[in-house]
Length: 251
Length: 292
Image (cartoon, rainbow over all chains, first blue to last red; front, side):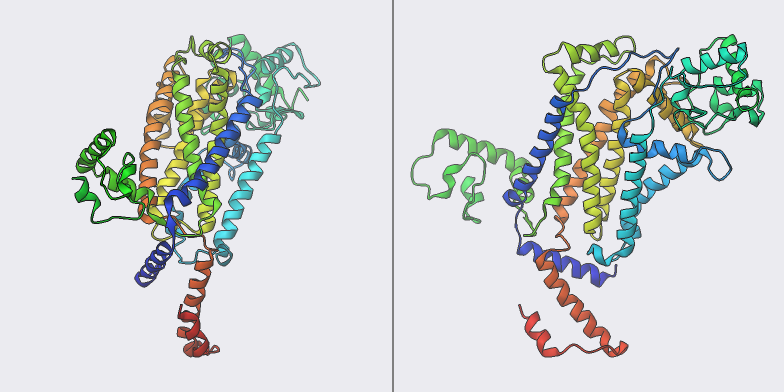
């Protein structure tokens, strides 16, 4: 904005103020009405839908559903888009790059859009980008709301060719709630973890699998998978064999 | 002292303090001693702090005549924040940030404390309401173009408040200390640890160590109760100060704005027309319009 434009704005706003009304009570009464409605709304919701008590923590086993609050669904859904299946969609995009770009854009908006025009119907770029952000957030939040909540123990996984160790591995898989982030043959949540139906076909090896289970970031940098450090050696073995067999032996 | 302060202004409704209803009329009767003491107290404080002038500056400043209902969303978010502060203080009186007893204290609040369930539910729903209001407020500011000169820095303080509000939601989530809270936070701290360069350090600070352990809960408690709230209060102060200093924006669709804008556009077109060869605006019609 040029200096003359800034001065023109100041003059114009001074005129608006001179013809205006005092903040108290003319603006305050509106503020108080809307604030009372907002607080009343929360009050009614709190009575109508009281918050219950969840399950106590048990880090060892888990029937866990790592779903954040709804207002983080848009970030959570990003994890499903950037799954790390190929070089173009690394997980780091969803966990670091995209959120930080959004944050920086948010902070510097007024320094990008410095035009004097305030009427939105004359700001096509601002209008488009504003609507895109709104629809993007709404879409991702909606996708997060509709995403099936994976349930541990929802043992609908039917695999052919399971031997005894595969069977044991599947049990560990179910008991640890893996299906709340991963999918095998249409059973489980489609994310944030990758689909494991053909995990064995990637030929990563038993060692890799066990290491990954104990400390996911050591083998998959950027992974948001929690470490499963409390299984027994036998359980690690069974689970790793099971995972390595997926898509090859067990289908 | 009172007379010296009041006389030069003598505004029509001019009470110089909340305790001085008698000031409006000529002072002939002896004052009610309680009122007199009240005035003295107000004068004493005002002389040393300027609080009366400050309050007047804040409350009785003019705002454009046509403010919109959309411009109340920021205050509504502030009101919900205040509600969160109050319900949060009540919850803190019963909550125990200890891995062994946190869950039981939540149960105790929900089942045994009088109104405990209501306070906890209000706090939880309040977090959602606050996020919604903050986003709506931001959308209003964006579509009104209110972040433009001279209010760029007001927007920056608001953006910081939005980010702090999101972190408030994130850190409060763990305190419930149930399965869902625990695992969602494990994922969140893992995501933090995966960020390049600073990520592992920040994750260690959040978790109070390389692993998710017993101190993680009190760490999150301190962040949720002390660090972020003080940041939010500071930035609300800055935000409000800038709003009061720079004034509330006039909606771009205000009638007065349209009129001013039309005149401006006309003037610009007249300036441009000789060069661009556009139709010149008749000077006569323009003169009569611009007169008011």
